[in-house]
Each structure stands twice: as C-alpha cells, then as structure tokens.
Image (tube, rainbow, N blue to C red):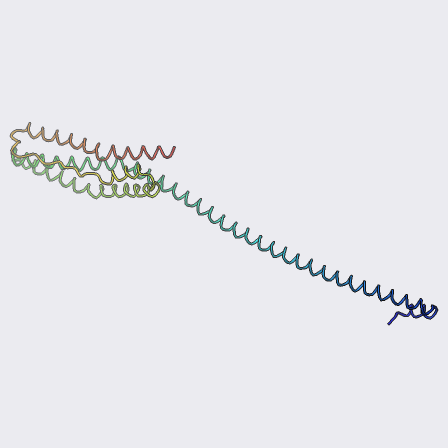
Length: 239
C-alpha cells in the first residue's frame, strides 16, 4: 500500500508516470530488503568472529594462567629443594667436622684405659701382687665402660652427618667412597701383654709404650685421615 503523499502525487500524474513511479518504488524496496539482508549477514558474521576471538582470548588466557601456576609451583619446589640440599650440606659438614675431635679423643681414652687395665692386672698377677694394682685395674676398666655410651652418642651424630652428605652428593662416587671408608672403620686390635714375655717392670713398661703407639697409629689410620679426606672433598665442592 502506497504512502499518503504518493497517493496524492498519483492523483495528479498520468497513468504511464504512475507505473514508472510504482516500479521505481518497488525497485527501491527490493534494494532496501537486499541491503537489510546483507547487513543482517554482516552482523551475524561479526558476532561469530567476535565470539571466536573471545573464546580464543579466554582459552589463551586460561592456558597462560595454568602455565603460570605450574611454572610458579615448579620454581617454588626447585627453590625449596635447593634450600633443603644446602641445609643438608652444611648440616652434614658441620656434624662430621664437629664429631672428628671428640670421637677421636673418646676412642683414644677408651683404648688407653683398656691398655692400663691390662697393664695393672698383669702387674698384679705376675709382679707386684699388690692390691693397689688390682684397684687401679678396676678403676681403668670402669672408666673405659663409662665412656662407651659417650662414644656411641658421638658416633651417632657423625653418622647422621654422613647420611646427609650421601643424600646431597649421591651422584658423586668419590665422596661416596670417602663416606663408606669412614663407615667401615676397623675395630682396634690391641691385645694384652703375653704373660710369657713379662719378667720385669721394664718388660711391662715396654708393652705399655708399644701399645700406646699402636693406638696413635690406629686413630690416625681409621679416623683422622679418613675424616680429613672427606672434609677436604666437601670443601672443594663448596668453592
């Protein structure tokens, strides 16, 4: 249906002019409809593209967010692991270094007490027959036995330090060999004086002097050198 102003114009125009005007109006209407359709398609395309871009943005943002979380967690774990290894490294070194002198001195005192026990007991049995030698032998025996718990305590502390060192340097064969060497130390084999060789005080004193020298060599071989070797390797790695 034509608008009112067109109807007024049609009333004044000829029939041929009316037909031309009507066709032109129809053409304009068809073009408008096509234009509207094009605009609607364009609107849909724009909405689809915007939707996809938004989805990609959300997906990309999510991926980077998750990656950031994982990377941050990994970095935190790595930092904590390094701090833990540094703590074990320093703790292990300090334990072994701190135990070196007390352990050596305790073992030395125990072995010397054993030698003095044998010395006075043999002196009582073969030479003096004096009760004071028997009492002296008992004193040194008791002193030796009382030191055994102290030796066990110090040894435990050192072994804990060695365990920390193994944890930190588990891939280092040289350090592991040095640790194993300490753990497998040999027990002291210092026998009492053979009765058939003791005829005088000088014989007994000679036994004591030789036995005390054996203690010095034993301590140097089984403790001092082995611990110093390990500490030297650790210090080289810390440089």
